[in-house]
Image: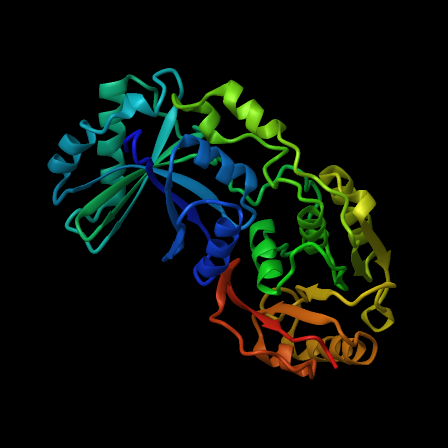
Length: 371
């Protein structure tokens, strides 16, 4: 890593969403991002690392790449790890931990690799090692090449710092934001989630519409690094990009507890004035006044909640309501069950490859504006 050309920054996402995340990163003004397996890479300095954590909605975490070298046995790994300039990034007074993964390499024991790297850091820098440390050094050994990174995010970035209440099988905010983007949502049209649960889609859409930074309410692991400049970070955070949305975001759910939960989460996120939540069944859903927009929903699906056969009637009711009452609206449905999606009778566009989510593989089924 050098001051002149910067270093490689990796933004992680679920496999299959790399291109969507890359479009977001490019749209936020980062230079020359490119999609790679599992995320997006770009080059930059520490201000770009801070900005990515603060601004980017779809990334699960942001890694700063520190070094990369060939290592075919543990003794070689130990020697090379001691030559990494740890003091330029880590602080000797801040605890760290090491996570390692090995793939198609002669070093195959990830625990032993992590132990060697941890020892190298302790003995060259003097920093304490602790299992619960916020600062994580990550080593990926693939085809005998070891890449050393530091996780600059800490807690995963879907933890925005607003949602205290969640319902069963919630969608991560990072994935919800990418699905919204994949549906063409840019914050200028109304959104409706007719099965909103704890309000994830509605709150993410409202934050996009209000141009609120997703990381505005939380802290990050990079605040514990030697490279951290508190004054520069405060100046970055102080820049106000918020605006009053031109359209509201709406959530419905048949469960009164889900509606109360969503309202409380929206209040904590600062978007209560831009959102509306209403209790009611799918068949009673009607579009809000004004121009058409986007219906997006993460309904129950068999292996997640309930039995697939029993859910067919629910999906048929959803599709029937949308086809009868929502002309001009686009629809996005997230499910692991194509059979359930097609039970809606909606005219879906071609789907992309399924995305890993909570031990399942889900797909986004999208429509053009309904006739």
